[in-house]
Amino acid sequence: MGMQDQFKDKAKQASDKARQAAGKAKDQASQRASQGRERSDEETRRAQQEAQDRMDLDYDA
Image (cartoon, rainbow, N blue to C red; front, side):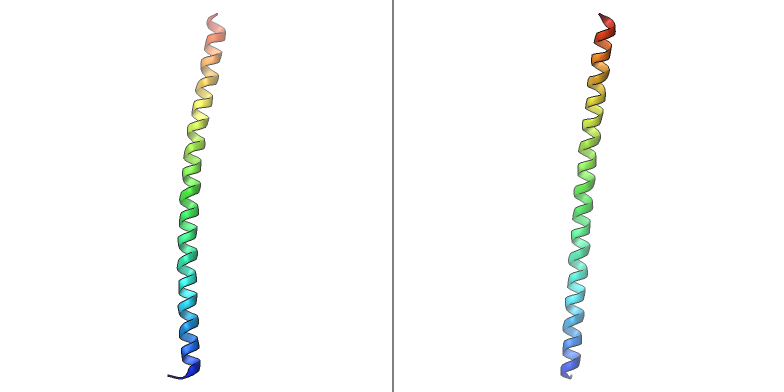
């Protein structure tokens, strides 16, 4: 195997490793984003419920 082939193999290995790392990072970012959305949905529901409760109290008086 010539020197050129060795460099090509090393470059391919580095490229594959970089692709895997990028894919893993993308998956982790996606997972964190979906967790953030779940929290914000829960907070939105809680805020809506509190607003509804306040409105109900105002009209009950």
